[in-house]
Amino acid sequence: MALVPYEESSGIELQKLYNPLATFAFANHTIQIRQDWRQLGVAAVVWDAALVLSTYLEMGAVTLRGCSAVELGAGTGLVGIVAALLGAHVTITDRKVALEFLKSNVEANLPPHIQPKVVVKELTWGQNLESYSPGEFDLILGADVIYLEDTFMDLLRTLGHLCSNHSVILLACRIRYERDSDFLAMLERQFTVSRVHYDPEKDVHIYRAQRRAQREDL
Image (cartoon, rainbow, N blue to C red):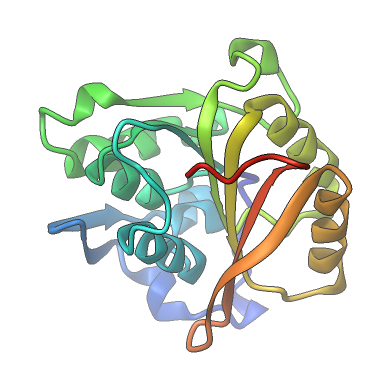
């Protein structure tokens, strides 16, 4: 969600950042994602966590057709686009400054008959949550949203607001630092958390979370 500027000395894969267009195949569609890291930082690049989570959705790990889903900190919108192509009604969210960029990717990659099932909407974690109904979504998706410690409490507050008793959260991430593990420990105080997938090539984990003592319907 946070728009973090890229530093040339950070060692991030340069080719990925410089490529203005990234092409993928999901849900029997070719998806072309525009990237613009110079303007929007790391939020405007497709990272491995988004690819792994999109693949996991495509595998049928959760029921998407007809479900109400939200993607948090969507950045380029890839995960939300894939969820929509697989049949979900999706709200794709990020901060206000990123919305026009996000909308351009969504509109470019969804067929006209699917676009009415998708909403691009502002959501800054922990703020103005009243614009979303409590427990509004069946499925909450996040790819590489666990990286800024200052946002952890706001992210937890947002997850708690959006979840109902039957909601499922899927978070895809690398465990890069101790603070990442700290967030998972914080999450476990409110939710039942399990690791449901690991991609060893990309070193990306997917964690599934639900409110404690809930059935796993999805």
